[in-house]
Image (cartoon, rainbow, N blue to C red; front, side):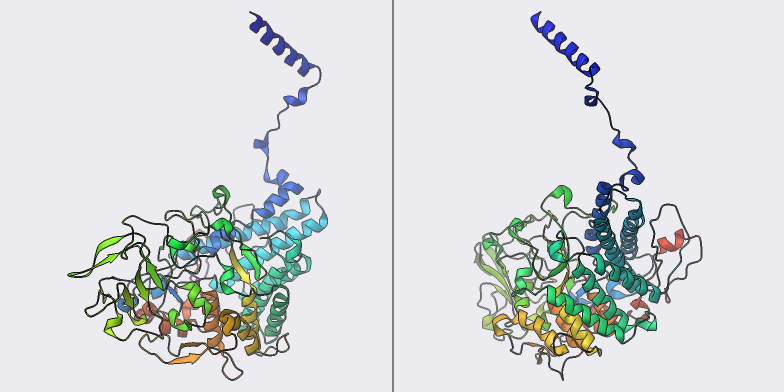
Length: 612
């Protein structure tokens, strides 16, 4: 009875307190009635709107097929010695490379989705009243940087493209293509505005656009316009001077790291010795000008909810070839010790031969030269009737450098009659679909391990390392290219000085020496070599493209580099076996077809790019 009286008293007391003025306790604020207009027009809402522009960059930069595959460095297909006319249209450039290709519509849609977000920030800024005007100006400049980046990708891929510059608020099915020269004019205007208002890297949050990011993109935009694709970009020789000037600004403010490998997660080549984890890595450093951010919280490490195919985390550790899961001593089930290799982007046979395997630190970092047993295999049959007792940690496969093959049978593995090694030994001309031994089977080649992140389980795509979209090493090569195209001035004396600065970082203690690449990278049987140190008499566009391949392999730029320098058709036909055999690559492929989905939705007649 006393308990009932006590609770009745407390209830009456609560009612009395409400009636005596504590009404705020029960006041309700319906956030369900919140609208874009009344939220984004506040300082807090506008900040959230600006932040919402950045996550979609994760999805865009993970759409790599139209940037990496179908080039001289990467193919969707693998096993190049049987490179018949089958496989991905992105490599073959056949009738399947059309307006219905999923990769084309996916990239198009993501770029325009991001463009509209940037436009929304810019359009709504004038209605935000409770925000510091300087801060508001910076946020608008961030959006202009993003808008310029999206337009830059669009105009390079498709040429004349629609160029909306205001937030889309109503349905509009009229598609108006804007001339490429006008698109470049707008890109440069946005970036120039952004550069004048954005803070320096040290005065802004990591991951936001900065003054240096705008300057970097300006250098690349001017360089591209200077080449003046098909005479349609409004470019001139003066653009190369601008490219050089902006590249110098980036070089001055973003010093390169001393060691190339410090740009990426640390790891041992033998995964059994690996002790690091993603949480120990720091992607922020002086060389990175702009990065797409990832983090360790799985709830916030995904792409954008507006993208139905959004990935979770950085997938760079899992999309390159080759796959070690069928080698001796590999577990019967999937293992995360080598991460997962989905073979979405496979290096072409030329790539290994662009490096000096002994002198160039990038070769050591980018490729796995030995495969190790992850468990005992005491009765492994190397070849019929010949067994090898393999223990955990033993080397089971060695990939020889292109310029140092084994020549004697006795230096081969027991999988070869007369071989004596307890592991398989493959020369570079045996990489790919060339099953000469029982050890390696089909499609056996060195793994491209540049972005490997230790400590990630096989089925887990949650990479956490930030992706450096811009870094100052590229500014050196932009400057070298601009000088080669006639730019005058510059902080360094000549094009070869800019070029060799990147090379010498890769050589480390061998700085100043003459690294050797294959003279004919496309011919896997040739042992001829040549130096890739630049001199005034040797530096040309092909040398710069080779150096870009070594330095930026797998980073988000290769197709753009080849198109800009007018080398796409020549180099892809030479180095990509599927393109060479299929023979479909031609001038029309320097522009992509507009997606059929876009043409079908348009209420007006939209002209398709020529040849499609």
